[in-house]
Amino acid sequence: YSAGLPDPTPIIDEIISKYPSKVAKKRKKAMVANDPEIDQPVQANVRTIPGIITQRGCTYAGCKGVVLGPTRDIINLVHGPIGCSFYAWLTRRNQTKPETETAENYMMYSFSTDMQDENIVFGGEVKLKEAIREAYKLFNPKAIGVFSTCPVGLIGDDVHAVSRDMKEELGINIFGFSCEGYRGVSQSAGHHIANNGIFKHVVGNNDRPREGKFQINLLGEYNIGGDAFELERLFEEAGITLVSTYSGNSTVESFAYSHTVDLNVVMCHRSINYIAEMMEEKYGIPWIKGNFIGGSSTAKTLRKVAEFFDDAELIEKVEEIIAREEAKVEAVKAAIKPKVEGKLAMMFVGGSRAHHYQDLFEELGMLTVSAGYEFAHRDDYEGRHVIPDIKIDADTRNIEELTITKTDNPELWRDDLVAKKAELEKKGYEFSHYAGMMPQMKKNSLVIDDVSHHETEKLIEFYKPDLFCAGIKEKYVVQKSGVPLKQLHSYDYGGPYAGFEGAINFYKEMERMLVTNVWNLVDTPWKSEPEIVGSMTIN
Ligand code: CFN
Ligand code: HCA
Image (cartoon, rainbow, N blue to C red; front, side):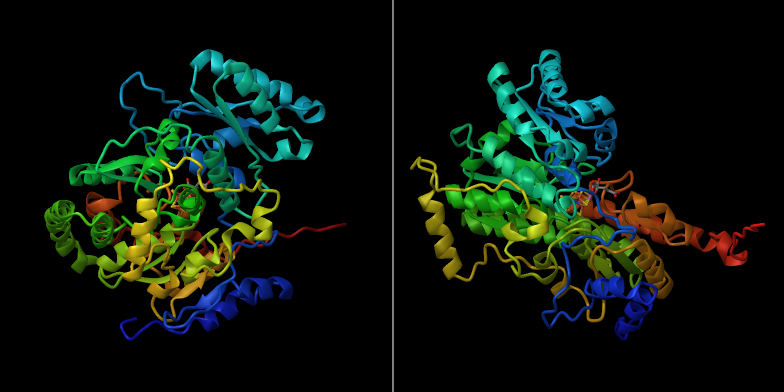
């Protein structure tokens, strides 16, 4: 495609020609032939059509698995059948490192009320109370979060009332989440519910005094494959105090004083923008977007943070780190780029990585021919706030809304930060500017939201990509067709891929996966053998 990508309209038409007309009409709105120069709407954050094989997960997965899952000093108790808890048991590869050997860490456990038929018929609140008492007696935790699964909402167990009663009885922080799987159209609703719950029940509970000259939180970083450890290394060396991370390698203890920072740096905007906005509204803390996927993105984000603090010493230190680290990154890139340049990649992942990882491919000279998110909203694609986040009906129906009021404690309302933000904005510094995926992608690349299994097969046939990036459910189906699949959720067994060290690891992984003949040797049975057709004789 050195002369540019072909117009993907024929492939869009071919894909949807197999669908019934109503379905075709709906799916067509989720597919766009990209033009970075013009704004085009893409359908996103709407209900998946029943019968289509989607990549998506549920609201419970977004709340329990994604946002609260990586926090080690809270017992995350799942109220529901055991399968829901088992599903979210360390499958996301979010790592953690307690300060000491005896510090609280419950992440290796899977807590569940293990609901049975009789609890569905007679109610499960008594069992939930017993489970909370048992967890408290065994572990003596400082906090317990209770997560609702589908049957809980259907039978009407009130996890909030139970949590309030148990908080009073045991004297520790206990709170519930109405994150039943069916509540939204995807994981996205679960992120919102988790953000609201943490903000309401934890943030602001501890007004710890400052501990550093430059204090930040990192929002939307989940320490998959050790990503957060690499970023912690960089901040520490620069002299920037990382007060809390939402929620890679995190503690609820740190969430409680995370409102004492000067700046929030938001990495995955999709999952955590709500906390950034609420902290700004209540405490006056500004937030900026940051991306640490790719060597040049990492350098750019570090510079942005240093620029915010406007401190000569900090700026110098950050430049010193960037110069040293970029030299290492460049050396590896120079060796690998000639071997993978021009290779074609596709990625269909979550709500931010399908965009962020394009930076790494660009650095290697690879071309992203088609990409999409599973559950992002239109602003994540188009780069503008096109829909007010809080009001999308299917996504927010029944979500308990929070009324945020400016803090009444004058010491906690940061006038200095509000003034600083206004001053920087005048200089053209854009705080909440959110660059979406589409303006960065090439003309005629194909953007697809909530891609289906049928569409995946057709895309592979059409583009014959060198690499497909998605998750565990897609991995083996794609590989059986002779195309290597890199998991951009769990990183397969690899990582970290964030920061400078992460970029080096990722380049090496691309060399390992793409400079090999093994995929040409894959001989799928359906290529050589006729399709097996079933038949039945009725006498
Ligand atoms: S770690 Fe994040 S970066 S939080 Fe989100 S939108 Fe998921 S779990 Mo899988 S890998 Fe993925 Fe993103 Fe944000 Fe992860 S792209 S789907 S809900 N995601
Ligand atoms: C989730 C979690 C997930 C699943 C990954 C996958 C993750 O959505 O519930 O499908 O491989 O990153 O662990 O996104």
